[in-house]
Length: 167
Image (cartoon, rainbow, N blue to C red; front, side, top):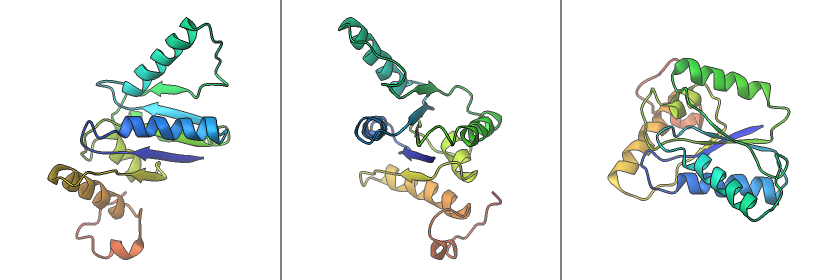
């Protein structure tokens, strides 16, 4: 199982749309078993879009079932304990699911789920699409620093890290 997220600390960059497109590609084009975890408690845009999709399918009289649509789960508990439970849950479903796509809100701090999961090495790949503005560069650099300090990334870069965090 691979755990992937397209992440940005800034809202409105298209991360939910990209996560949605990627999950759909994996499920509908490649036939993979996909689970989406929607961590964006303030809006749950991914979950909202799925609910609208089901309403439209129902309105058109098209049958749909859980085999056709990949599941989208809203994640409500985002403290350390909740994130630990998510990480353990992922270990338990690794035989059933090929890909887990995580959709996070646009924020970044060491207490945000994306950082906690990354520090626990529960995310295999984080893509950070950026438009080159100061906010995105600073937040992407902060996340990259946390990941490097936790042993993810190119070991050659680890030598240049001024701080070492115990992960």
